[in-house]
Amino acid sequence: MSTMVATEPEATPKAELTPEELLAMPDGGHYELIDGELRERKVSALSNLIAAEITGVLRNHCHEHNLGWLFAAEHGYQCFPWKPRRIRRADVSFIRRERYPWEQLSEDGFTTIPPDLAVEVVSPNDLVKELEEKVEEYLRAGVRLVWVVHPDIHTVQVYRADGTTGRFREHDELSGEDVIPGFRCKVDDLFPKPSQAEVRDLTKSDSASPSSPS
Amino acid sequence: MSTMVATEPEATPKAEVTPEELLALPDGGHYELIDGELRQRNVSVLSNLIASEINRILGNHCRERNLGWILASELGHRCFPWKPGRIRRADLSFIRADRLSEERFSEGFCSVPPDLAVEVVSPNDLVEKLDEKVEDYLRAGVRLVWIVRASVRAVEVFRSDRSVSWLWAEDEISGEDVVPGFRCQVGSLFPRFSPAEAESPARPVTSSETPDS
Image 1 (cartoon, rainbow over the protein chains, first blue to last red):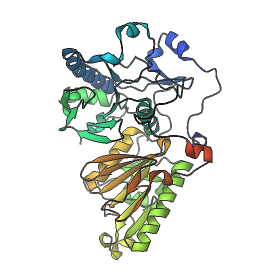
Image 2 (spheres, rainbow over the protein chains, first blue to last red):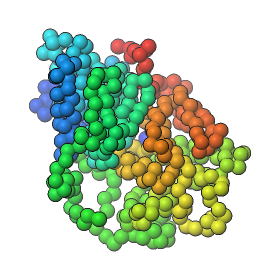
Image 3 (cartoon, helix red, strand yellow):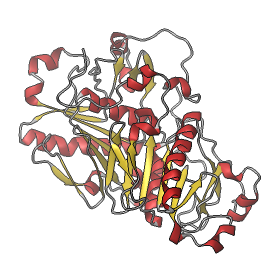
Image 4 (cartoon, rainbow over the protein chains, first blue to last red):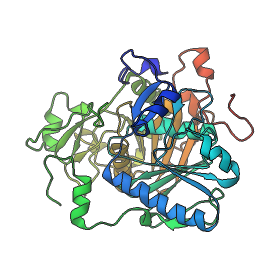
């Protein structure tokens, strides 16, 4: 199908990277590896804050109930057996304790088992196409729950392994379902609440001409 | 690798365009108007092919039953009263026969919110721009929004009751109560390039099947 899409940025011919080479790069954590090609992860200050907030609330819950491991965005997943040179990094991910033994944790550079939960926080320059491919691959790999956080519309979209989806808005409650038992929070609580001035700084930091608030 | 997506033409500060000026532009149909600013619609050969296929099968269904009007992407929708300087163009839209009276046919923009709006994702579409578009349609009163996701051969359905469904190639999509009686397999909306590609799996494996290692 990709042959038809003329606008897809085509790689200039260059040496393909292996997962091992990515692991050895000092700033490797900034990149995903898509079939041998580095793809920089797009981030914004706001998406980073939200990811940290989600990590925080999930970690508290999982720690308290001894449920499993939470990983930050630097952690790479090599769990796409149909694409051996593909390394994905979720902004936040969770693996149940019994699926990931301690010994293996300390040995792995990349994690080869799919996470139980993968969370992606949308950044302003994220392409729809790349996001939907990422979600599709996680589900195909066996991730049971994918949360895509849309900061612009204060919404979390949930994709489940059974193919169902749900869209949760500010006042809705987000639940860990059967993946993170007992976890629930209001969607709104995931979004940081800085002052109005700070909101403007975060969301318009790269805008040359801040428009006056309407 | 630049973190900025270079392909979206960023407007240099300039005078705001009015809906009337957009209408007078010879190539106006290529643009949406977002609060006075022209925004070029991203297209690709594939997104265009898919839109015309949906136009064909949905159009056939609606014509046979005299259900209403199928509108193509050149038509501008001006149905966002909270943003007077906003004109959207759906790749395809449908309005029930009884909601679009004949005296409106001569208007330059369609001021009646469509019953169904269909957007086919193009390779350069940004997530946040698409979010904004779907929000606008739902707020305007569009009852059903289909986002066609060609890269994964799926359609996402948004409804006015704020429920959402994600349908894969082998699922059936229906017109629900908006386009009564319409149903087809999602996969049939996408062109088939070759038998090999047509059979490539685009759906996540279910628990009963595991990817080959």
